[in-house]
Image 1 (cartoon, helix red, strand yellow):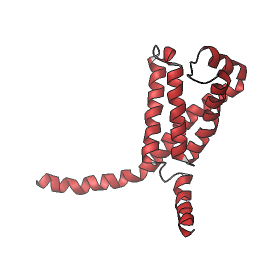
Image 2 (image 1 turned 45 degrees about the vertical axis):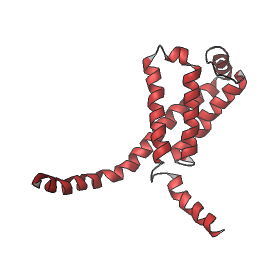
Image 3 (image 1 turned 180 degrees about the vertical axis):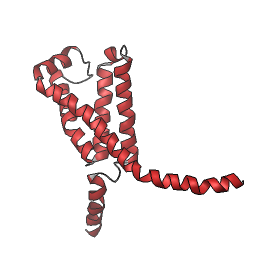
Image 4 (image 1 turned 60 degrees about the horizontal axis):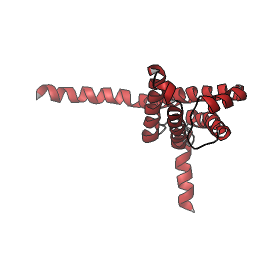
Length: 157
């Protein structure tokens, strides 16, 4: 047990050095996913006619009319990623982008099922979004700064 006793302080020091990096990783995850979805939204809005064509003929969004699906998908990709990147209403943004991601996979499954790389990208983004959804935005976020003030203000009322 001597080696274990000697290893514990070394492991604790290593964890102490790594812990502050967790907040940087949280930020990198948020920025990476936000970038991918925001760029997709920009592509859709640049050519609205092409977007409507894709939603009408390629994407198979269940239950929604083409125009509504195109508008909601594009709006989700343009509004939610900046919130995610800033860490503002972060869990809401992560949940919303997760929904957009799931709908994209369902709507485009006939293509994604034959393109492993594209499907893997959606799975990867989904996993990163789950990290943010369950872990939170980290200290490098507006939520980290705002939420304690909001909570304190609500407690005074």
